[in-house]
Image (tube, rainbow, N blue to C red; front, top):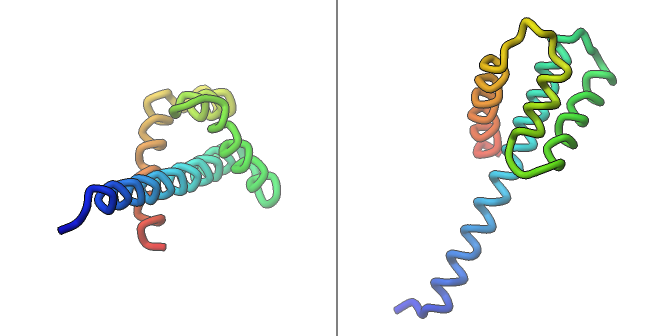
Length: 103
């Protein structure tokens, strides 16, 4: 029979693993969002990469996704709606989760 300590350690390890995957997926999503906005605004090459890093860094301002949303909203042209931005955030999160799970 598995002792309570072993079970507790197992739960802690699973939690740590899940949090690591969530972090990796979020960073991946933010990089993809950076590329998407860079493409929308005509950034290429090093400028595109630098912008993706700015989006990743923006996510460390506060908990949740609102800091990233504000960064994107401020940098995208007005014809891109808030709904479109949030939909792209969800779409790319799903893609990032699949990418992280594959690796």
